[in-house]
Image (cartoon, rainbow, N blue to C red):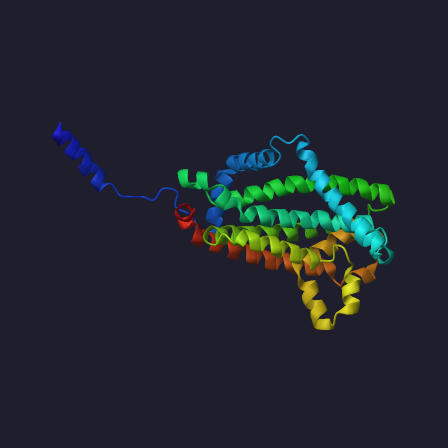
Length: 298
C-alpha cells in the first residue's frame, strides 16, 4: 500500500504546475475570456438589477422616479426661480436629455468602482476574468439608461411633436458611444484602484459631482463661450463629457441653433471616441497588471 502511495506522490511531483485561471494581460486575451463567460456576465447583470430593488414595493419604477425628481428640482429651482429657462428655451428637454446621458456615465463609474470589492466573495472562491464585474455594472447602467431614454423620447414628442425626428437625431449615437467608452475606461481603472485604496469610492462621488457641474447640463455651452477666454473655452470643450452632452442636446433639443454648439461637433466627438479607445486599452492593461492580488487584498 505504501508503495502505491509513494508512486502517486512521485507522479504528482513530476507533473508540471500550471496556473489556474491566469489573468490575461493582453487586451485580446481578456476580450476572449469575457466573451467565453458571456452567459455569466448576463447573470451578473440580472443579479445587479434585481438586488438593487430587492424587497422594494415600486421596484424598477425607481429608475424613473429618481431622474424625474431630479429634473423637477432643476426645472423649478434653476429654471423658474433662478431664471435659467429664460436663456434656454425648452429647458425641461434640455436638462433631462443631459441628465439622462450623464446618469449613464455616473452610474457606470460609481458602481464600476465598487464592483470588485462588492464581489469579493466570488473573487476569493473561483477564478473568472475580473473585467466581468465592472462590465456587469456597465450592463446594468445601460438597462436603466434605456428606461430613461423612453421617457426622454416621450417628452420630446410631447414638447415638439415629431419635429425632433431630423438628421441631428443621429448625434445620439456618437454621444452615447463616447460616454460608454470613457465611463468603462474609468470604471476599470478605479475598480482596480479601489481594491488597494478604499477611499477611492468616496473620491469618485466628489469627482462625479464636479464633472456634472463641469458639463453643460443645467446651463448652455454658449454661456461658457461668452464668459470664458479662448484657452479656457478650448479646455472646457475638449472634455469628452461636455462633447457627449452637447451631442445629445443636438439630437433631442430642437430649440437650439448652431451658435449653441462648438464648430465641428461631430469631428470633435470622433476624436474624443478615438482618444477614449486608447484610454480604455491603457486602463485595461493597468487593471490586468493589478488584478493578480485582488483576492489577497480583499
